[in-house]
Image (cartoon, rainbow, N blue to C red; front, side, top):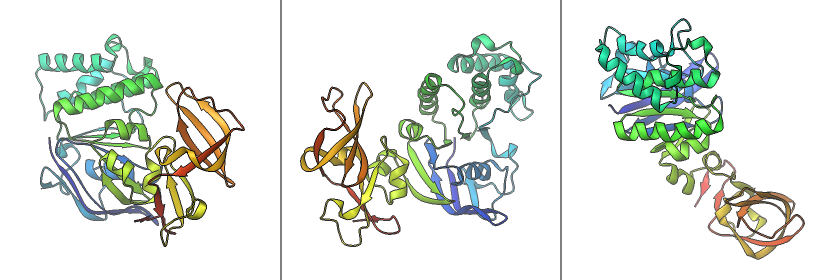
Length: 331
């Protein structure tokens, strides 16, 4: 496996800036998730690393080698696209085996059979191996697409929202499987998603992108607990962080325009009155939707709470975040 380094990477498509001076290192053996909404630059970053697109400025290094002059095939990367990229006239078995039969790899047939069988078992498609790709459901097609990358042992795996088309249970199962495969193999994996649960549960590192800029890079816990901006804070956490005017509780630092309150930042039973607008009972916890001084906020409480709509709850902040007018964190 290999370390991937992006150095001052920039890319524009006409007037649209897709990447703006992105510098980031994907450590060897890490599971790095690029997180952000549509248009943030996530997929463009993958395409720069894979060689499908070339940067306007900056460089990509894989394993210490500048790959600017290398084709996608020569870069030894395996990419899983958001949309399935299968050969419709081939069976599942043939689709999975195809990358191993390239002139570069020349994998012996017994090894091909072994790897195809192992990956099919992990992805729960062993019973579909002799089906044509056109006979599969959308979720099954995506599993085969993921499997075509997993049968190889490239320098880097690149995955562009590979779980987005799967049902909730399979998505949860594959999160565990992908993380297990990466951890056990020591693979370097660069993974794109807008799903914060995938980022929190799978990543060793998260890169938060906003309009082509890398705004924060660190472990999921670091970004959750120490966000550099209101934008970064809003990328991770369920329920989403509450952002209210800084003076709503008083005691805000100078230059603070807004206060950020995660559920654990809201202490119940003390402070000022808020009214329960809605109660969501989720089994392991209960979410409270509160009205506080003409503002809405969400917090969590005990699963067996007796609180109901219309009840009054006293609340106060505990170690909240403060942000300035530009959204940057205020100490």
